[in-house]
Length: 474
Image (cartoon, rainbow, N blue to C red):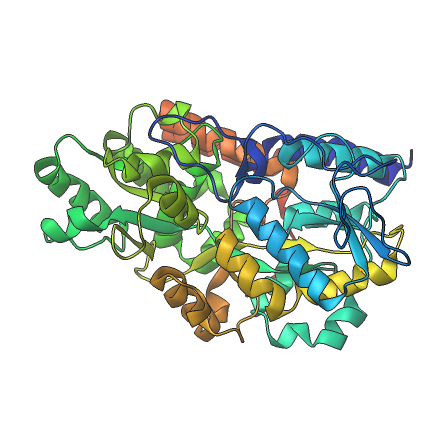
């Protein structure tokens, strides 16, 4: 095994086991069925290398298509809502290229964590699929550094894709000047969801900054004394970092946020980071006491069950509300990106696909990527799955909910307001999970000085300044 592949296998396997996008979900009575970002217990494999266990696209069970091209693809969209989105993707491919048959996740292991582990085992053994799902940012960079993906300069030029996606999105999938994947969506991290009826009945204005959040929580002590103010699920730990990031954005601003996660801030002597931690600590009394045992979707479920007034989560929570709680956007729940003062910044990450260096059918894979970049795939897929469109030339009214309509319009008009989030990760992948551990531990036992020292040590241990130097913003 080559040194590069050994690095990929060891580093990415550790990373994948901690990636929030695939963490198993533990359901509770108040929880919702996740629509994005988490997976239930690993799904049964859809195929084996020797013989597919379910028909490929364009065939019926027991049949094969003469002369068909085959696309071997790994993805983790197997949960309810995600499965339907994957079906929409492959339907768009079939419409454009009826001769391409899709073989999904062809090894035992299913989606999510297991999907990444099985995929990386195959790559380490030199047995490459045609394409696979990956996030932009640090996860993508690991694959690029390990020589797994082909650069896509020619395809991006053919599609003129850089002209229809926001600049920060293009940079999140570009390493050393070359785009390596085609993004099909953008997920926004920092969205504050709230019980709209509760707010309307009590003449409460949704908060747009930290001071407003605290004052709203204080008002809710009287308006809804049996309801926790901010629902949080800390079981996967990244949810805690989501909340802290929102405070950090307000405290330091966009440029500071990027500099911090690129390792350019001396955290040990930085008053901004200290102030953000102190404000984070102030939120503890307003958070559900059982947060350490809940997943993100269960925190959303607390709002849907009227046990919490608000929660801070990504775009995928829209599906959790509508599917799990039967709540309708702008009727039962409202949402706004948070914070919006002093500046509105959207923290994001994309789902993407590329072509491996040993793709069995590179031409079929390139045709797949052409479809991934198209409105014909992005509209049905992103509407179902929960993100925004990667393309800003798609009419925001294609979304059925006013929440995403407004956000898509904002991104179209303000593309420089996007920054990689905790899933896309400016931090190197190995440092990311260590950082989540620190932030999560702080919520359980707040110690500002200890947290600052731990973060400073993390920056040094993982050589963040050099490892994250690739990221350019805006």
